[in-house]
Image (cartoon, rainbow, N blue to C red; front, side, top):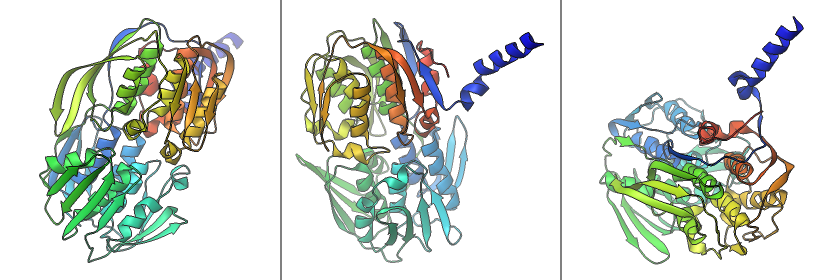
Amino acid sequence: MRRQNHSILVNFFKSEQYFKMSKFIKINHTIKPFNKEISIEGDKSLSIRWALIASQANGKSKSTNLLQSEDVMSTLECLKKLGVKVTNSKYKCEIIGAGLNGFKYNKNIILNAGNSGTLGRLIMGLLVHSKTRIKLIGDKSLSKRDFLRVTKPLKKFGAKFITNSGKLPIIIEGTNSPKAIRYNETKGSAQCKSAVMLASLNTKGQTLINAKKSRDHSELLFKHLNLPIKITKEKKIDIIKINGGNKIRPLNYKIPADISSTSFFIVLTALSQNSKLKIKNVNINPSRVGIIKILNMMGVKIILKNIKFYKGEKIADLYVKSSKNLKSINCPSGLNSAAIDEFLLIFLVAAKAKGVSFFKSLSELNQKESPRLLWGSKILNKIGIKNIVTKDSIKIYGNPNLKIKKKIIIKDFLKDHRIFMASSIAALSFGGEWKIYDKESIKTSFPSFIKKISYLGARISN
């Protein structure tokens, strides 16, 4: 009987049920050489933007390869609360748009943005016309992030906001007569820019945005939908003019693969021994490929093939090889906005590079789900890599012979999905005995992350 009970317990601990129950993973082995091909789920930024814009369209919009992550599900739930009809499955999502200013909802509703800064900030742009008060909340991490950067410009339209010292929860009270505005976006934040762009859709007159260069997914979608937008590109800023009050046609969209999610596999391949990887149908929007440019400068071999354009976005298959001679870099700060979500991974490559790498003007990293610049330094310290960090820069002293033989625990990082995944890549690349907490955090942006790295040969336990 004891043997039988012992067998049942062993099978339970090995089971998927126990794996789901456990709050952490253990990685005690570097990944073996691999030569494979994978596909990555839809781009998170595009998935959220598609849903928000589809909610303003007249008619039914359809999407395939929509990212089935918590951030995107929070977006769909918020739209449902605003009276938008949404039908979603693993393979297809349909949204019947309410038209401009067509939301229908009960008084005093509460919208929960969860962990999503993109959703929390962008949806506020659609609510400057709200007929009654709406309360916007988020999880513990999102509630620590700055929302004044969005409420300040949106107030110019005529909306009112009651904030918690500039943070969530926020009470939003719209206006019946919004005014077109002039807005200088100086942080290089695509979220702030996009919130103003969405607010301008149902505002008479021309809204003018002088925006520091950042991701341009919203601009490309506006152009594809033939909305009256005019963009003049200068050296450091984009001048964006939008005439509001125009109907939006439905948008059918097959979401391309997310470059941010893809980046974990690019770096894993680069840092592994004798490995090759093909990643299909990846969004290589020029405002998002900073990591490819930076890694190329550091000696990582990334080849783009089958390049094409789809609804304004640039798409390609990526081919990556292991890199033996990684070089240090004095990273041009002009690439920061195009790689802002990938710097934790870039720091890992710098850790294995020959020489000293320097990254500056990175204060925006500390405005993410957690203070990522500080966490990047903390992870480097844990793996034995000397670094000097300031409020907006980091200097990394690389070690090409880096091999870890100690125990490392990663926890208390505000459940930041990118810290969990970057730590996993470090463990699989450098060795050591790792215990990484909050594995549920990957549901925010990349639910299949563990399944994908396991497919490549990663050995993961609980």
